[in-house]
Amino acid sequence: MRAAFKLLRGVWHVLMGWVTIYFRFPQLTPAQREARVQVWAMQLLRIWDIDLEVRGKPVTTGPALLVSNHISWLDIVVIHATRHCRFVSKSELRGWPLLGTLATGAGTLYIERAQRKDAMRMVKDMAKSLRNGEVLAVFPEGTTGDGIGMLPFHSNLIQSAIEGDAPIQTLALQFIDTHTHSISMAARFVGDDTLLPKVEIAGLGPMICTTMC
Image (tube, rainbow, N blue to C red):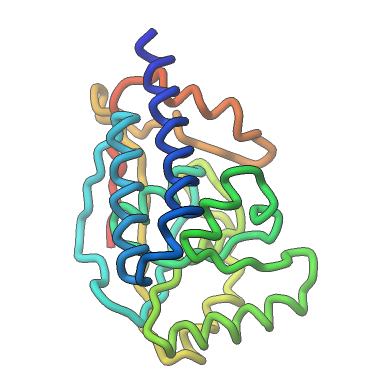
């Protein structure tokens, strides 16, 4: 029952985020939208008993390019809770029900991964955003891993920091079981995993996500 209640609270929170984007965001300034996204992300982590521990000092202002490892669909929520940024994601996400609206509302930049030429366009768009003082984030592994080892990097998007004359801040994400203090695999989202089974996180004990800058 407790797990089901946590799950329902999380789903309700996501729905309220969708409503906020549709009906409130048009009246808000960019700074107000960023603040709403950060608060929303922190609240979702609390609902699912995930504490956020930040080691180091996240960038406070742009321009900056955040480069992070990728473990879970929760990574985006965790980083947004640390500070708002614009992520680069596969174009398919834009069409996903509900989640696509949330991602677009948070300012996500979309790339056609199947088209190599689109990477060049994305680098130019990212460089322009960086020159405008924005904070962007990429997962150079290109997919999720187990959080223990690193997958090969696809570094083409990092070129945007050079063209945009922006610093790079590296992030290392890690999910820790609160009780055992060992690395938790609950949030892991690897390879061909589907999103639906990952709702099991609502039934697990508290976790800590450590973000090392």
